[in-house]
Structures are given as structure tokens and as C-alpha cells.
Image (cartoon, rainbow, N blue to C red; front, side, top):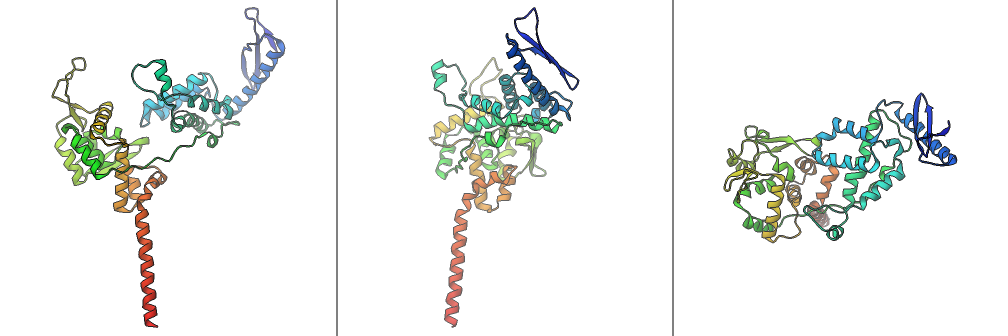
Amino acid sequence: MSVYRDKRSPYYQFDFQHEGRRFHGSTKCTSRRDAEKFEAAELEKAKSLLKAMKRSSASLAIDDVADRLWNDSAQYDAEPKAAETNLARLIGYFGKTKSLTEINHNEAKKLMAWRRGHRVSRRGKRTKEQEAALPLISNATVNRSATKVLQRLFTFAKAEGAVFENEPKWEDLILPEPVERIRELKAEEGDAFDAAMRDDYVPFFDFVRASGMRLKECVTLRWSEVDFGTRQIVRTGKGGRRVVFPITPNVREILFPLQGQHEEFVFTYVAVYGNKRLGRVRGRRYRLTYNGAKSAWQSLRACSGVANFRFHDFRHDFGTKLLRDSGNLKLVQKALNHRDIKSTLRYAHVLDEDVATAVQQLAESRKKSRNKARKAS
């Protein structure tokens, strides 16, 4: 190993071979001593890289690993656009040529700190002062959009055969997240929504409340997924999992009259205003989109006067009421398409009254038994 100076550059260059592979480039150093230190560090990186690649012939550059991950599975995520954005963010932060072998625990901590400094994004133009006033993103967003994405890259590379000596300690990097609250819709709040709702949106929101499905799952429901013969809705849900939901008499009453409104999608709305650019004609029906459903929800919530209730709380309301009526956690897990029963356990508080009732009944039963025994003696 040795460093040398090229006449065309003020910096020393390094050029060495390790296990049959050549490593070379600029040290960006003008003194030999600093250049030799740089070269020694590059040798250690080379050793780590080659050791990691001994069982994996594929490149471990973050851009290459991300590309393979995308082609293998990420493009089939429930939200592929989010996966693409998150991977691109990591590549932009580390640089395309950064090897995963160079990303140790400290490097991952720096990524996490950098991501924590980002603010919530909002649509529309804003001044710098307005942007600075936006809140910082939540711990959950940092975990989901950075830390767990990087962990996924490492997991994928290891599945290909790579071995990492200095892999980050993921359990120490995951930020604490508040326990998600479980919000139940009160009867008077449901009445307020019904009173404020546009007629063309009634079937959509009735289905949301009757199925407990997520917003995107409801909006994208296709007729090809609805089978009135077998009385089932069969589709792909979050995480690419197969979801089967029963078409109960109530659900059938909601969906059956909607046939013929749109060739492909189940839920539609009536255009209140025309739009020449979009080819939209006032009074005609069009497919309900994700953004359109969000706008309709925001308007409904404002007009109804119901406070502290998010769209996702319809799902919580469904899960809570189903568990209260059935008392069966496994059933609720299946109905909500939870991969892990731990997610369903968030609803277990609704069984507290049942537990209290059962304990009281047991106490009364024992009391009666004792009284009978005393009378007999």
C-alpha cells in the first residue's frame, strides 16, 4: 500500500488491492501523513465490505440494494409510493454509492436525528415563516419513514447472503410512540354526521362504519372484489394480505343499489361543479378518489360539529363495538385484518365491564353457596 500524488490533482491518491479486488481514488488530502491515514481507513472499509459480500455476490451500495428491494417486494407494498419516497430519501441522505457496511450504529443515529428535524408537510404555498411554524414530524413517522426503512434494507441484504459486523442496534434506535387512543363514536355524534352528510356520500360512509375498513381500502373497492353470490368481499389489504369480509344483509343493502353507477369502482359521487380541464360535468357521477374522500370527510366533520374524531376512528369504533358484542378477540383480529393479536389487544379495555360483571357474579355465587351451607348446618 502506498499513496502518490498525481500531477493533475493537488491531492494524494490511493490505490491498493485486497483479496483480488482493486480500490482506488482521491484521498482529498494534501499531506502524505493525512493521506496515509485516509488510505488505512479505506482498507478497513474494504475488508468489511468484502467480508459482508463473501456470501453475497450482489453490490451492497445502498442505491443498488434499494433497487433490488424495490423490484423484489417494495413495489407491491400497500402504499408503494410511500415506499419509493422513503427509499429515495435514504439514498439522498447517504449518497448512492454508500455501502451498507459503512452504516454502523452511529451513522444510523445521525440519520434518525436528521429525520427528527423535519417538519410536517402541508400542501400549498407557504412563506419561510409559515413553514418554520409547522410542527415537527412525530416519532412514529421517524420510525416508519427512516429507521425501519434502513432496517429493511439490511434485512433484505442479509437474506441475499450478506454478513454485517457492525449492523446498527435497531431496538435502541426505534423511538417511543404513544399508545394509539381508541375512540368510539357516540350515538349523538353519529346522528350529527347523518344530518350533515350529502346524499351521494351516504353509501360510502355507511360502508365505512359497517366494515371497519381503512379509508384507502374503502375508496379503492372494486366490483370485481364484491361477490353477492358467495356473500363475500375478497381483496388485498394492508401489507399485501388477503382480506375476506362478509357481505351481511346490512352491507348488501348498502352496496347492491350502487351497481351500474360506475363500471369498475363501487363508490361514486355527484359533481357539484363542472371542470372543463378535467372533463367533469356538473350533475354527473364520477369515481370517488382518495383525496376526494378526504375532502368530503373534512367538510362533513366541520359541518357536523363533531370534535376530536378522525376518519380512522371509524375503524376503532367498529372494532370496539364488535368486541363488546362478541367478546372474542380472535374474531375481531380477523375482522380488522390485524397481522398481530397485539394490535387487537388495544381494544381489550371494552371487556373490563364484562370482567367486573363476571367477578361480581362469582362473588355472589360463592355467597349463596356459603349461606346454603350455614342453613344446612
